[in-house]
Length: 387
Ligand code: FAD
Ligand code: DHB
Image (cartoon, rainbow, N blue to C red; front, side):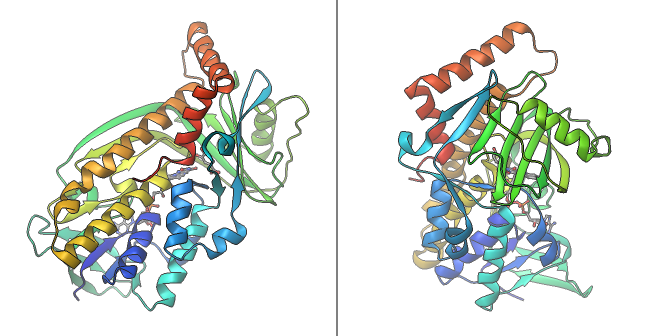
């Protein structure tokens, strides 16, 4: 089999890239290790930046997003038991949209299959070869157990942080581990507040978010080695109630539909290219979740890559492909700093002393009361312009 761009991974990065390439008339094949049902049900991120929404709209895949997504014009920083609203739209003119990552994935899969374009689900033993040459290829075993070879001109490694692509590129990695993890729950309970609440509390960070008017998404800071078996539904609601306490606030509870623990890491792969292999999204970088940048960065990477590939295949120009890694890494490092800053300001570090806690509270108060500081948070949160 032959295609122009072999795409490994059908997450937000791989599916968005395949869609953008099709709009440019460039054919691609998407190879995905999991089943369609699995990737459509995987609960992960939920906050779309303004430029992400614009991109999905321009690409013609935002019809349901515009109908069902929840636009948010502000968020709360909760500390000292009170809310301090950051008026995102008043400060930046822009908003964010709450819409689950798996909904974005569903919309992109539907668009691709409707167009009769291939996605091979449940493939295994995927391996990129000869990426330093101009005839790279991918070998894999398809869902029927047949061994196959896909010849391409370019390979896009969009297979996330546990994928195979980043192991092929001999790039340097810059990594940082955080001494925290997030316990995330999805609950059949209406949101307790109309906006997201990022809470600094002496017992640890907590986040109130949502997916729909009936479904709440909540997170608790836990130690990185924590096990989900230790957290009964009752214990989760009890801890959320303690941390999310504020005057006039009542936490709405309900059946917990899903719960899980995610560790927090920062990783940056430099460069994001090796010959004809281009890494995008979590395959190239991981951010801690505070600030919700992971999926948004993945979509930015592939918007840069799609444009560069269109120039390459259409006009033979290589300058944008050559600049791909540097262009993406500028945004990646900005997001790393923002996510690290939000994480450091809001979490309780093990062994932190009273001095450090007072610095955190001072930073929170400053961010909540200075227009300059609030605008800095807001413009990063809604997403800096692409160009
Ligand atoms: P992925 O979504 O990981 O997609 C990669 C795809 O490649 C997957 O479908 C995978 O099955 C497939 N794949 C892997 N290996 C292979 C292989 N060898 N061959 C073929 N296919 C392969 N971000 C936030 O902003 N907020 C959050 O709350 C949040 N929560 C998260 C919770 C978890 C458990 C995880 C893991 C991540 C979370 N993130 C969150 C990060 C965000 O979801 C990611 O940044 C985003 O999914 C990146 O998209 P991607 O397409 O690059 O990678
Ligand atoms: C969500 C996740 C985040 O990491 C965040 O900062 C805000 C919201 C969410 O899943 O809704």
